[in-house]
Length: 268
Ligand SMILES: [Zn+2]
Ligand SMILES: [Zn+2]
Image 1 (spheres, rainbow, N blue to C red):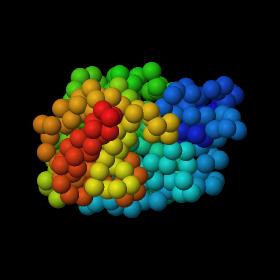
Image 2 (cartoon, protein in one colour; image 1 turned 120 degrees about the vertical axis):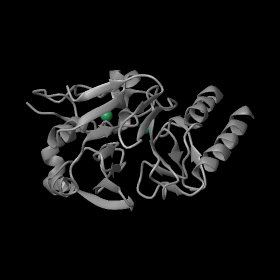
Image 3 (spheres, rainbow, N blue to C red; image 1 turned 180 degrees about the vertical axis):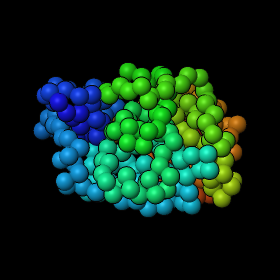
């Protein structure tokens, strides 16, 4: 028996004797199956050919990403906080070097994930560090490996500890979540956004999409909903889903002017 991993999205599935026939996350219109067809790997094979890069994106915010790049290619963020560390988003590869490095920083109290594209090997990580997993209930159908550690939360926001708050913005996925970290951004506040508010190549802007690889836009109602749900929270920095995909100043204005530009573009 093996927990097979989809090579396209990096999702680890529940234990089976043979690889699953299909990956529902990749067959969904927001993702894609490679031209050559569906393929699978295992954590053991992944460890043999890859390692993790660990580097701070900011004080108390350790980036963890796989090299050479694997699957979607996001890096996770270990937010170090006095009440316990939170792993924001997740990646597939977990090897001994990563375990040792994270243990040396006091491990992981809980994992929170923006949306199903980054569920990756969350149960593997949670089991290793004896951590809880927070997922929004609206994305429950996309969990491919169930675990008692997963806590599905409902509603618009969920306070965690040390004033950390999960916010359900929807958009890209119905359960799409961002994390508010008031002590981040040099104490002016930060949002950790995954793909829900995507930091784009021009780092003065962000964007929002239903599908990034397949270029499916979101409508005006979804954009306005995202703006409304983050409005009560103050933040100066945004940390996106990839290395250096961050807005390091005046990020709330960047969201406002990006949304304005987006709404203008879809009205024309
Ligand atoms: Zn997949
Ligand atoms: Zn995504």
